Figure (tube, helix red, strand yellow):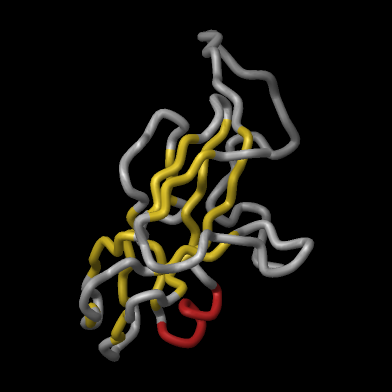
Length: 144
């Protein structure tokens, strides 16, 4: 699938690192380093503007290494870039660790997954059909 993109950063375009990768890394397009204090959040710009086809979204997701090693994650994960959005892609990062973390220019801060989606047409009814699970949720199927 071809997707139109404008890159105003000095980084290369996002790309798949391996043939089976679902996501492409997004890099920080910032003039100065940003230090995130514990529990602090910020929007990190990427310098990327995209035009997705109708019926698709771009999902902004955390990078597992940043989350596991440093407690840095995407606050609204996954963030959604709608097909009709034409602004710069920004990543809302939060520091969930006890230590400050510094983000550098060009650093990989998130990943972008392109996904097809459906639109729902609601059918309002008085009752839903029965299922084996019923209304059980929030751990109702057990811990193991």
